[in-house]
Image (cartoon, rainbow, N blue to C red; front, side, top):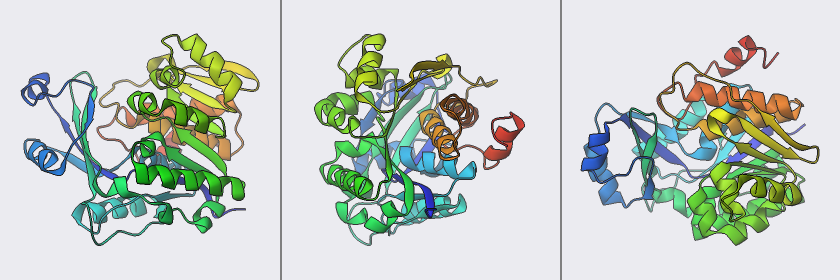
Length: 329
């Protein structure tokens, strides 16, 4: 029995979320649904123009860690923050969610990363991100004990976009093999996959579980035809989960390809964190020996819960809500 069900590794970023109009985005020269890395001075100027913001710790892997914990799982997180206002907020948010922060805040260097999330009336999110300290996650911060203590290690594909963080990711893979910890990779973003396709594709071949949406999977295999990407994934990946929004998800495994329906919600307010929470639910189900179809249903339910709220995190009573739906006992 290991100390943690899952160790999550990713960019430690504080989300600053606000509802905005299409006109507001146009005035700021921001395309709806776009994402772009941004320098500190620009992010500060943009943040000053936002009103009625929700500020909470975010980042793809951390969102998954919190969802996993809210379901009842034992989770830990490795990410880099500075000992500043946002960094202290980040650590407190994780601790409040019963996620062990097994890194240490650094005293010097870049400020804690933040992501401005603009939510338009169609529930689409447009983002501007300052990675800051998160981009300097180093191999030294991936320690043997944290990996050995965990049944799964989950890494976000965004890490591959920063040279130092990429090396940290490689070390995590080496340690996962050493300690027989199951490896999990979220592809995170089709732009990132496009940029590092060859390297990420090699990585997926030695990863136990892959999560990605339709665009990311097609990008991985450099095709515009989903069925071709699915066939390629079936030949190369041990277990691949493809999320498809309201169309549900696909489970690609040694047993073939299985379609699972989406768990519908009454109103979509904000799609931030949907994929992260799907992964949290699926992994929690897997760690509790649910069938793959049941894991996918739990993942879809978790995604439906977060998109009905503003921000990337679900309600802390997620496990009780899942029990009410008969998804957990």
